[in-house]
Image (cartoon, rainbow, N blue to C red; front, side):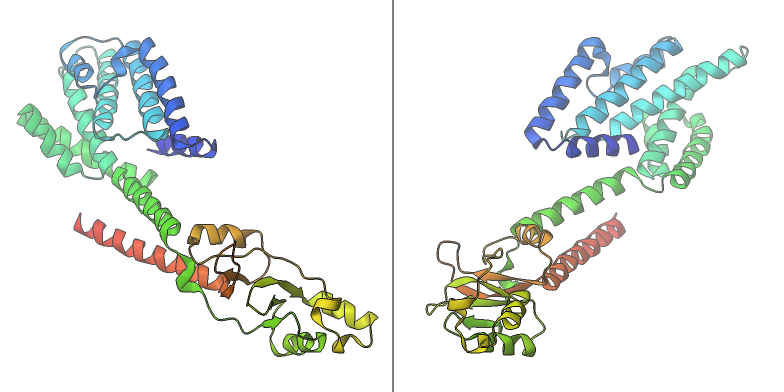
Length: 333
């Protein structure tokens, strides 16, 4: 599970789009299948061969490594696939290897190697799914071998507690987390910021005086004041250092008009139809607490502002709702 998670993160960090990741993963998987065709499919034929034919440990180890690599390439690159049958395959391979090792150390041992194969399947499946009882019942139903029950119970329960001690995460926990993260990312891409727009009191007309600007900075603890024209079209912002510099160098500055003496800076603007994800990107390179919202980039009529704190609160609210939904699903399962 950790290897598949690592491979998936490796593909994502490559920066390639999903189609390209699938292409690369499929190409590498195809090369592997050309060299070792037995790793293709669900692996039932190979597991059946473990049970009914004699294998050398070299061959089992090679096909085990190839199967794990094929599964990680497939799932890691973004392809849709389960982990149920790969878990059975890996468990069967490990069980068979363990049986071969036991027979090598104790040649007169009476238990046949296929018994170890079946017990390994149940143990690995119970550990991977955190459902040892399901693994026990399924293996008993598959084999109709009730003498297998005791070793299967011991192996599955031991493997379950050992896996929870080492990893503390199960196959379906990872799947649920990925689904929740993808749903959250989708919500960030589809939720619009229009509901976060707040009225803005720090707005001045371009015909206002520098004294008006100074008074507004005294009344409001802000870094920028927004400037509009007579049609409420957004023109830019006045930064506090710009005003202070003007006052230091010009004694008559308070009576002068903004349009005559102040240089307007233009900071990034948001539009109501932007997603939370897009707004977050705008804020990521901006040191201030708020950004102006205009009706559109072509017709930048100032509508208000969006605060960074409001954006983070909305993100946290979405995350809490998805976390709560995940907890309900876990309880239902």
